[in-house]
Amino acid sequence: MEIRFINHNLFQHSHYTELPPENYHHITDLELVEHLSKDEMGAFDELYNRYWEKLYQFAFKIFRDDEICRDIIQEVFLDIWRRRHELKIRHVSSFMYQMTKFQVANQIRKSKTRKAYLETMNEVSFVYHVLEQVEFNELNSYLSETMAELPEKCRTVFYMSRFENLSNKEIGEKMNISVSTVEKHIHKALKFIRSSLHRFQ
Image (cartoon, rainbow, N blue to C red; front, side, top):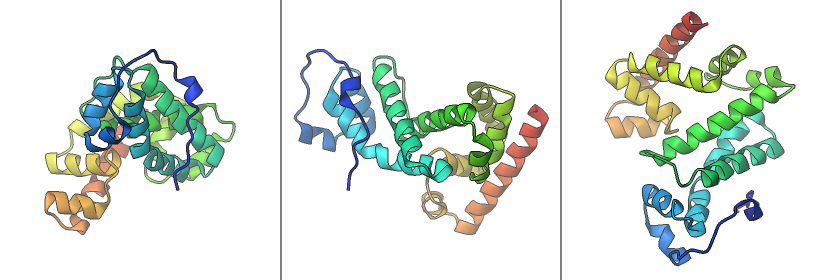
């Protein structure tokens, strides 16, 4: 059952012409972003419907708090609406998860119980510990540079896993490799990134 988190009163827009609601169901994510840049609320609604549950589940795995996760998702989509005229996106799914991770990092930084939240995280927990010393954007840039040093196949597997949120099975099918090979690539990437971040600290 769909749960609407967004308060549409937050989204101010002028008069515009948009597609019938059912037409948005049949266009790509990138086309939705293009329509969104034209102030089409129907495109925003469709983008929200496609992603809110996945992003909520991602945040919930970290915080286990419904209210906090609702606030995070609202901030994600509110920010997208505010920036709709300037968005430059090539991979919408990756962008949506990056936006959510940024809001998660903001929540962790300002939370009085940050350590408790960090303990609930899995492999990415180490990354957020570094937020004690650097801003998230700086860390994100450093991680991108670090990932670029990985072997191509290893880097591709890790990107699909952590930034496109594909399962190991889905990655294996896309790359025509076994699940165990996918797991080895992810383990190798995490080990390399952890080592690199230690040097960064």
